[in-house]
Length: 190
Ligand code: IMP
Image (cartoon, rainbow, N blue to C red):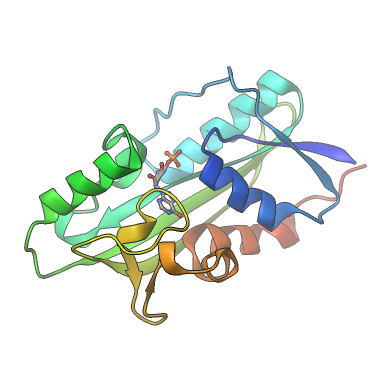
């Protein structure tokens, strides 16, 4: 089986990526911990391509990377590509988001995700993206998932991402939609 390096250091994302990609004809391996790629792009797609390409070149293997984040309508799309850098811990990031939003009545938001796959020489061969619309609650709810999941409420399911089973979140999330679109296009390699 050909190796595919999952270019993330985020354990929550890694769990989700493994669940999507298990069972395919690729051997998933983790990015070496010391290999840190600075996210200098100003779009999710640019950062996903950068991470996939750099990890592929550094390891000499195929690599898959995602870049994702939360975009809040009333905050003009913030925190966006800065979602991971909005605070030092998930609790801090959520507290900052709720403070910035205050009593704003427009709580609409979306998670966005871009995924890229790079060949061992670093060339990008595939990209996909996905979004999931929802609302930001005033208080966290639920213990599952990671990141901003406890404050991201999906009205159609009447649940936050943190209250959903991992299977339900995977079936409707930004990352789930991007990966579902990408999997049929993954090249067959020997
Ligand atoms: P990056 O893609 O490594 O730059 O990190 C994106 C950040 O966005 C994560 O650290 C989380 O804070 C947030 N994020 C991305 N996807 C999700 C998700 O599915 N649930 C909750 N937070 C997410």
